[in-house]
Image (cartoon, rainbow, N blue to C red; front, side):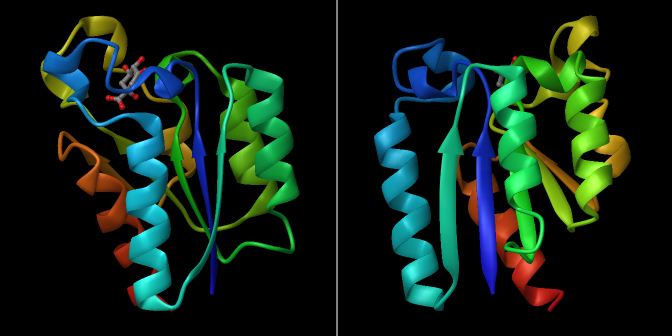
Length: 142
Ligand code: DQA
């Protein structure tokens, strides 16, 4: 079982950016949390973060033939990117959308999620635990 965890723009700023929405854990803390969790559960995991839409598309394509599941938090590209939606559709890998904050209680422009149309599940507002819940969901399905 192999999972790709893909994070979009500004998630490298976790711990610094808007802690009221995103908490105090850093991106390095998140990486360690996911790696430790996966090691304990015997799951292979690859983590990737980029601030660039095309790099995120490249990483989703790289998952083809390699990953059994994708956990993706596309950051602000959630609300704008048809390219990321199409990439997830292209690879046909079960994908869970994760948002650290409770996006449904935030601004109107955060209420659209393109990637959601290609996802088997969405988890919002559970902080970084949402990534672990997404991994559980993908691995329990197997
Ligand atoms: C986010 C929510 C998005 O609206 C925002 O642009 C982000 C982070 C979240 O994890 O809550 O960058 O995806």
